[in-house]
Image: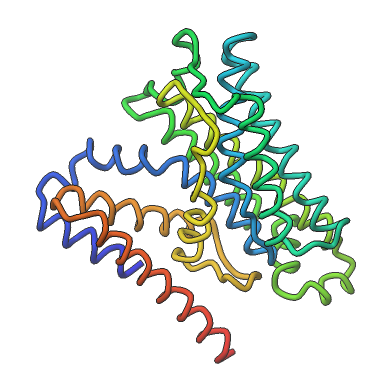
Length: 297
């Protein structure tokens, strides 16, 4: 929190346009997709797992949404695309729970599978949306605020409430903190971990639909790297990479920190190469602090 506040103050001094309403909306809009993905990834990491397939689901859902939009209209297309993410995420959960495969390996394999499916259904081509109805989510506003920001806010609230205010959320923390103790306490650890993958898949699909709606096109491979970005922002926000500890609001802070750094580099005309260095250093610092804190405990 301190680093984020200090960075905002420094950028406000260095660039008068940083604190303008338009710039703040740009930051939130540009990082809405990764923010939604990170919310789902947070649940997975807290439960003691990883999801490396979110980038592939993101791309596949965008393709599904546009292709169905061109046939049956925008509303059912969006619903089916998000549902497909839920199904694919559930499939990841099944690999981990019933196949007893480590989540890193299981979702790495499914990443290849989902990317392959995206290539098959698109033929490796860029798919373009017909009509303007599909573009509403990504390009229109309500009360002067982009729909993408409203959707991000809704996902943050829903996942935050699920994690911090429900019994299911307590089970997620328990599964990641000490799976064996949770199992002996009667918690269905397998079901809990499988369910977080389903939520993560739905979040990734929703993010993919938003991104496709913003530009009106989709293609295989557009989500490459988003899985690492989702993990990075989650860890940077303070969620423990070892599981059992974290919060959605912390993840939002991590997403905003990365977004503000990128925006600041653009406003000050600094090369994006240095941005990657700064982000990498911050991630190493966050993981080091987390490991040191757990060691002291």
